[in-house]
Length: 138
Image (cartoon, rainbow, N blue to C red; front, top):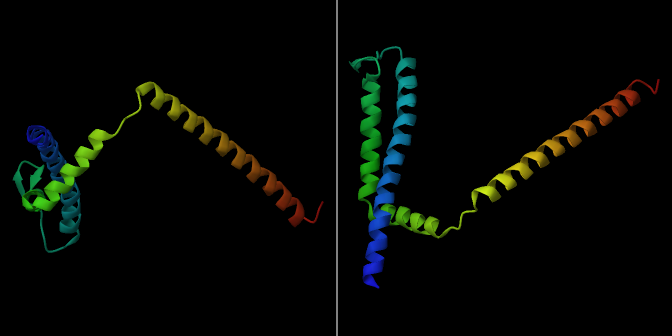
């Protein structure tokens, strides 16, 4: 029993690490765009290029903040355990086959188009009724 739990945790640990890499990537992109916007909106700050035009001072600051926050989260056992539990639960999910997904998607698209047409026609009818009433019935 212990071997199975340890094996499952080893498999989950790889996914947890990939999740943290995803988190640092998303955090970096958001921080990079935000810091560039803030940096350029401040009149007294100028953007400094470090390597070429793509790696600037704000890019390095964003990378340092994203990496630092993610490293801090990675070292917290409760965050690591929480993400691991999420991954274990996601492995238990039974995903529908591709054919069922395509069929369900098609049904949703057709229903959305039909509902849109119904609402558009209802709107046109009520528009004409309202125009007729407001024009005095003439």
